[in-house]
Image 1 (cartoon, rainbow, N blue to C red):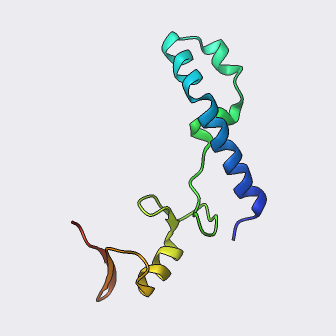
Image 2: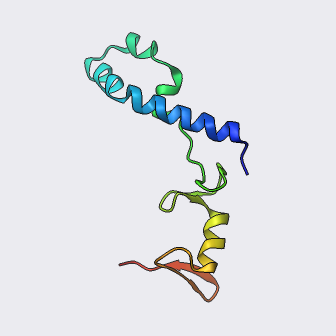
Length: 96
């Protein structure tokens, strides 16, 4: 499990990115890079890091499901993820 402070920091960054998104695009289109540098550093979407929604784990993140590979495997084996089934030797996705 990730520390609660790390999870909170990511939530705070996401809120800043959402808050300044329109202003950042306007400044980029205008080419005003001096004003862009005066915005908070955490307002940049590049600083966001994907984390598992259950544990907060930053590594092994599966974007399609929003969880880490470890939680994905546990949930898939229990049958908690629709459209995912275990095949002999590996877990596979059902493409529809």
